Image (cartoon, rainbow, N blue to C red; front, side):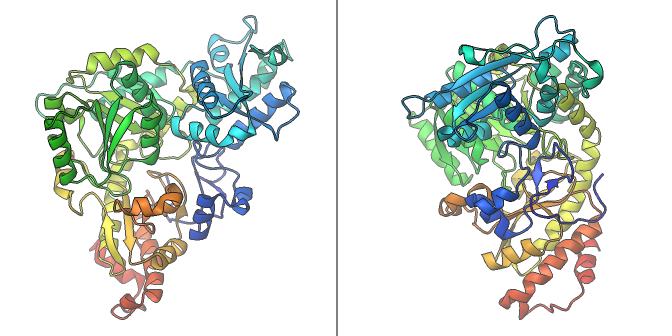
Length: 571
């Protein structure tokens, strides 16, 4: 459970604090976020952790450094390494780097594994194996983009496990220089601090839980079979796997991205065998009209991606209309419901594939990552997609991550309802404030009625909202004054804010603004702290904005106690 009172943390501290597996990092000021967006050296020097797809965290760096030492790589400033669980992932990474414009990329793949006579249990032997790719520093940008976009990299728990066993591993490569025998041959069981299980039981429980949660309340809908639920180490690795599956059945050649999608989703679409895509970033009815006109004129698409609701615009797509178009023109509908959550929205009858990041609200505790794909059993494409996914599926979800994910998700439903309640209160407080020009929230705005179509009987409006202030000065004042966690991710048990564009689209601010995402937008994820305390924290930050927002200061008594504003919402 989160603290009862929101609070901020110093720059660079992990969120949650002192967790080696944290998925967020504190960026407590507007300046720190923009500096990170520009990758200024002063802030890079202060960052010891970060969101795992954007930052190589300590446990993984320790494993990489130990591997370089083991392989006697004496030029660490010229040679980098990345660690992958599966050989297939490592091969895809090598192929990506090899396609770059360089005559001699010097990319090497090395496998580490336990010899057959190691004496360790089979589960330990399986999970102790990993793959390392060495590449020149000149390809660091391309390597980081692959790690970020695909979610194929090793997790911190898994890296810790492998590091503990590295001395017992043998390495193998096409380059004899990197073929090394184990350093130790006698397993010292007492030394191995992280015993491993197969993870089979946890995987099955999670599949059954997600199947139950995603099953539709609509008449005539069958309960989801757990076999139609696929688990992945990250949300992006789930999406990347789907795109590879669609590619293998000839489906990704032309894709529509409808509504404002997460930026890495678009990048994964672009990575997948040269798939071309049309971006309808406004998510408007007019854009659906345009798509329908083009389809009627003979244009053919293979798939349509959307989110319900979108992040950070919190708009809801018209899935009924999209479903009708898909049935008429024979394309697959994929929807990411991470923001909506399984508890709040019922979308399976209208889509073929539901994708979700389990890192967010499903886990909540911000110390493990995961992703899922749920296939609609009543889709005409179910059997084809299921067989394709199953054929290439690799068991890369580390068992100790599955244990953490299962434990964290035990109170997922209760946490979701609590955050729904607090989120609605905070949204009402913000929407009523004169400094706020617009609040993006599922129950407000142009698509509120669409959201109601897909809201479950006991569902709410979620934990996520984004605030558009009058100008950047007001937005940065609010952010800097907010005494709550500030950093990457959302759906955490603790209230968490971030200037979304400054973090995710720093170098394309004009472009994103043209799609209705202002450069000074502030995204707020409401946590599980005491609702009254969250409201007080937000109200105090708004009071600071009133002091500098002159048009508001003229009509608002800035000496009005914070408690009055809070009580007006709670009443």
